[in-house]
Length: 330
Image (tube, rainbow, N blue to C red; front, side, top):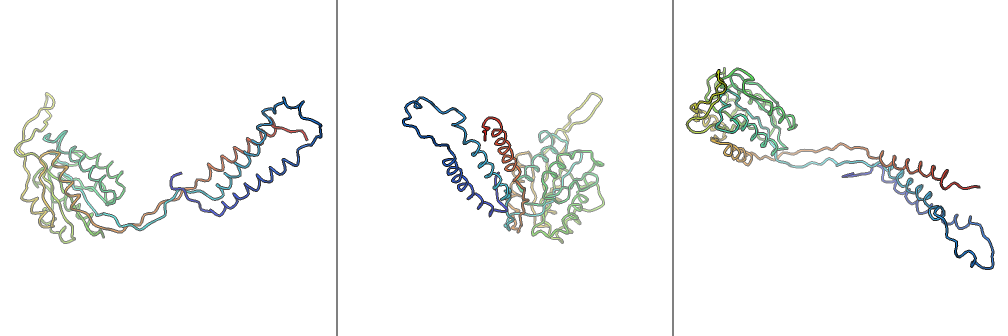
């Protein structure tokens, strides 16, 4: 019954019937009792009234309580919050995430891709008022989730991504262009792409710099994140003898990522471990705050039925007791 409202509060005036009914009951009870004139009560002093006499007013109490619940039901209780115009922090964000085979390297635990997913999901949960979408890329790119405020759906779709969903490779330009395409029609004050990758551009039909040019044209800011330790990282290889690990060189085109972010007034970050990646997302979270006006609406839900049900039960109990335990002979 949290945030309970009443659609017809005027029916509460009917509660004035309750004290009136009690007064009438008391008056009627006094005048209906039989009178007997005797010289003394001494012979009756040892007689105590039975439990039926003591509890005979329960019938009337049940009726008055049932009437109270009926009046409350007539007032139509509802759980509701009125709509209100508020100013909140919010922007449109596209997450462009690399899912190439190199993201399975285990310099992050359990690997780069899972660590990136975990941190990004925490970032999504921290921004409930933003529209956020997801683009994934390797040798090709596609939209895993368009811009949405339904973050539960977005998180489920993000959690489902894995390396090998499309041909392997790193098509940075294609991934960036797909994210730009999702944001170009946005009317938000601030439009942002967070591009996360651990490699160099080696596939795709679109040049990353050209995609960044288009992003700048539409007023989209790009934050780029290079994921991977300095030097080499352990990478799992499937062999005839099971999974074998081999240290492979970490290759990130930092110069390209820095250029892309600089062209759009964004910023480049390097994450060498999961903690650093978390700190990067926290910094982006602080950098991207824009005021937007939002009108909130809450649906109303009728709550009269429990009150009506209780009233019917009480009336039924009154009839049952009146016809059995407290039955009177005319």
